[in-house]
Length: 307
Image (cartoon, rainbow, N blue to C red; front, side):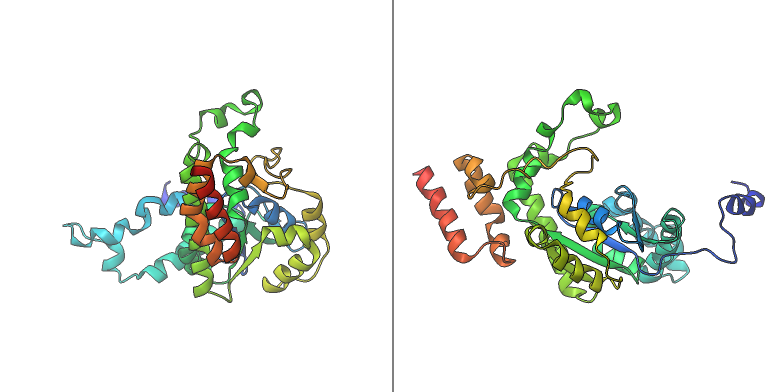
């Protein structure tokens, strides 16, 4: 764009050099895919102070493959790195990027605190904390067995004729077709989010999906207190009556109705059970989703079925 055209363009979008509004305390809902990030964010949006929309994906597209580090990597080249020449450190660089993106998101949030619900941001949380210094993070943790079962049944939930052409042409997540990859994905996201929380305990709160289902009022009371919002009943009431577990608005959670005593475990093959124990069992135990006795019984059941 011609430099002379920049200011009129900004004014046309409601942005002026004098004042660009940003959200001081946005909220990122993070977690493994199929854990309930969507319903949690939409529940928070029932609060009078909050707004949410679709998964943004923007930040992942910026960070994926180390894109935002590439200019720093140019320091050894003949043309050098502008950021290094101007003595712009990574913290400063991310802070300025965050200001611009915050202003963009805030321009759509109708004057409310915005809530982002992109699960993959669990893998970017450290950088996001620098970009948005006032942001809070709510990590939703769900039993790995239910998550993995939902992942591998992700495509079966849809009738192809009901999908938009853009969705039909889109690449399918690897975890939707590979049981081992589903287990590894759940483990990787959980480990990343909980490691982040350990480093930033004042900014990240982990809530357990199953506990939220059992006590929406109590759990949302804790969430609202943590993210410094006034108490309202709307979020808990919405969560209580909705079980959205998908990026697709009208798609129900394929495992929502599977609440037998054995759950998804009883529907898996012996090989799938063995893979889950090997790939995700330690994480289930480490973060309190399975007791030692329960994990031992799962391992024993695997051994018996494969004997």
